[in-house]
Length: 293
Image (cartoon, rainbow, N blue to C red; front, side, top):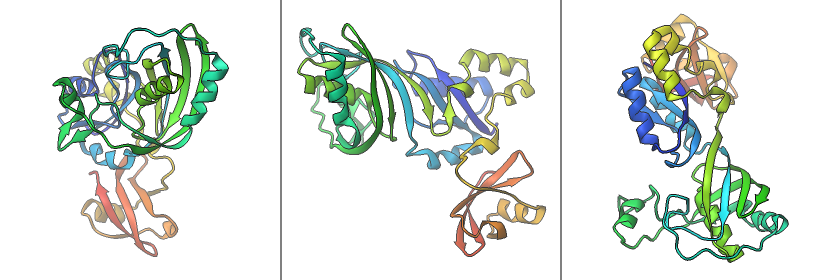
């Protein structure tokens, strides 16, 4: 079972929980995801299955879009609604204009410290495992890019926002740091991912729908997969003849005359079969970078 599925992750499940469920439903052991979502978060969770797991390397730094709610008034140890409050509630006398002004400070390339309850590793150990044992968690700031952070509304203590960020950005940290800047504390109350790279909510399926399709038959299940031609749309594609396709499958260099200016190329056999990704060596000579079949 090779392909890409986009699941609408429900709240309360980890990304690994979703991977485990999909493995059971489709009967494919090799399943991975393209970007972790915290348990409380919902939305776009792309999964790569079978040989398509080899495509994950091309999505490591993919942009992501979100909508969610930041609750002002107190911070939590996890930076979200699932953590313990770090102090008593504070009075919130902040206008939406003030909030929007402060949000501008987080735009562009910024240095961001990941939350202590995160999967970032310290000496090979995930930070959240140390935090749960009340051990010191010291994480180094990393550079991320916030392309958009828009405060839509402020209702009471809840600020609705939309964000467009680079891979590796923690919206939890933005919520926490914003609360620190305002002096009232804040945490991420809700989060829904709208897109990852080229995948968006319109392509998602629930786990229930996936189960129904798998029960109905192979054709119904296959219909839920993203068409291979829609993957990595910014990368040029070429349809190989039989000889070129055979060479690609065996990891041999191939001549792609029409792709002399491309760096990486998706190579197809026919309309539906993605054979692999080839990297230009020189001129029109390309070497397979990954082979999928």
